[in-house]
Length: 210
Image 1 (cartoon, rainbow, N blue to C red):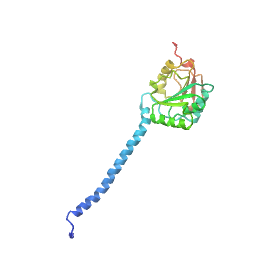
Image 2 (cartoon, helix red, strand yellow):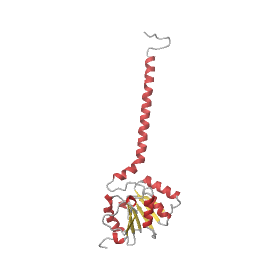
Image 3 (tube, rainbow, N blue to C red):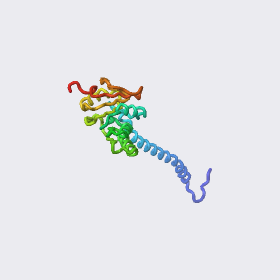
Image 4 (cartoon, helix red, strand yellow):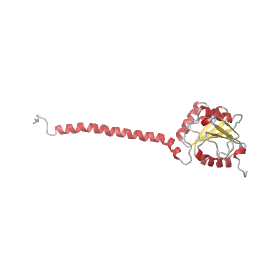
């Protein structure tokens, strides 16, 4: 039988044991809280990248390759004026176009990518000719642009045909990357595989009743 020393109470051992047992429990709660907080932060960062890919008509972010950029500029060789990249992602096409003299604009639904693009345009020294806007492409009119670049997905190309056919001026040129338009006949194409781009003049996209 254990003895109780002078100055000790019978409950002291129990109190000490409880205190020692609670420490791991407190660390566990702290770790759980930190993990939960980290997941919330990661979700808030990742959500704008993920949610566009869950929309019915989407432009999921897939960075353009250097070869794709070269092919786009090749198709646009000899042209000038305004250019718009529909679903501009991290701004590579817009910045490259601005470097060769276009007044380039990018529309992108993901705000993180827009801020990233603005920073890189500033870093590249072309921020005066490379502008980026947070916007849904279906809510924007492209009638003011004479050069249009689109990295689309098959599910949206038919609807985009109708939209651009209604809005673009006769002097406009459209460049489709990765996927061609389903009904328009391209005037020419450059590249192979995923790096292929197709160029369309007004004869391709002007509506029959115009």
